[in-house]
Image 1 (tube, one colour):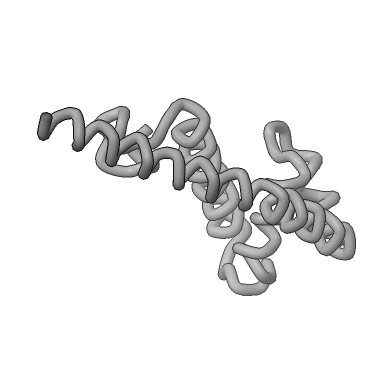
Image 2 (tube, rainbow, N blue to C red):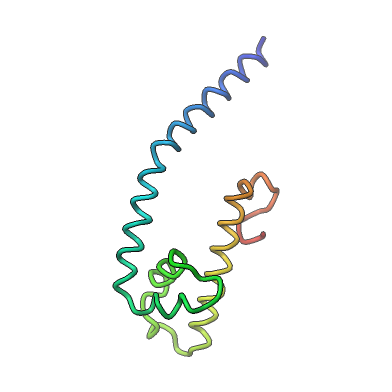
Length: 112
């Protein structure tokens, strides 16, 4: 009986999480639209989009992360940051599509 009660609690907890997810989907879509609208105001987004595998969302996020290229002493430092952040974004998005990295046994999303 105790095992059955535990299973019921898990399913009700999962149901609550799915309800929360359903409520967050429209908020996520609105945030995505706002991000894209804001990113069109930056010339750097157009330059970053020319790099293979960098789409509109990733370019907008990179502009936010990099802030200004003048932060970096050399072009090499700038591009190393772009590459490392892009790889991290890829690892996180891959892990979220395939299930969390906790389920896959990795220590972090960077370990993918």
